[in-house]
Length: 210
Image (cartoon, rainbow, N blue to C red; front, top):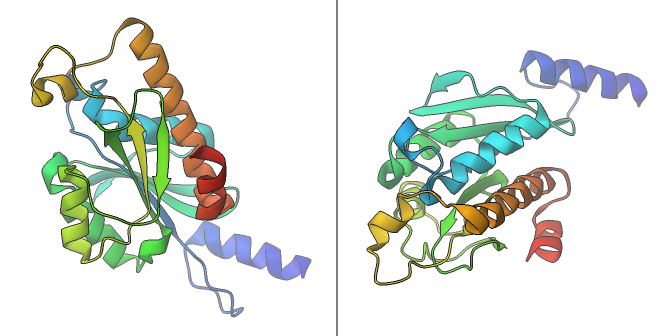
């Protein structure tokens, strides 16, 4: 058994299929956002920021370009995983996600989408296995391209604007002060939840982070 485990680990490192009858399962954790320095720390880039944090925790370098994305491949507790940041801008995120998922034949059940949510209070995160996109255009694009709404997703709460501020201005602006502290804490929690999605499964995430 120990010999087979070492062989499996070697196969993972070399990114080849296993002849041992053990399927190598790839996970894909995707954070949604907009590319460019002007959007880097805005509310709408909660997904990108979570991927950056998760990459730091897992020691995965986001240094590959392809599938209309910036991405990295590595392991999270010995599970082969992609971390990706679509570079298509938010509304076309599905083009990037669907192309990578199709190429590597990743089951939708092993895909996790992380994004900002206006309807969730600032500082809160919520995990769901399926459902409507709730008006989020990035998730809408992904659901349309994959042809299913049974896409696991992790929402990072940003709350709604106050004082009649336009939603588009609100989501494309950064947090400051106490709000920024709460936001960054939720990013940290989302990164931890993302790693547990890989290592412990969706039910664990639902039970411990909702």
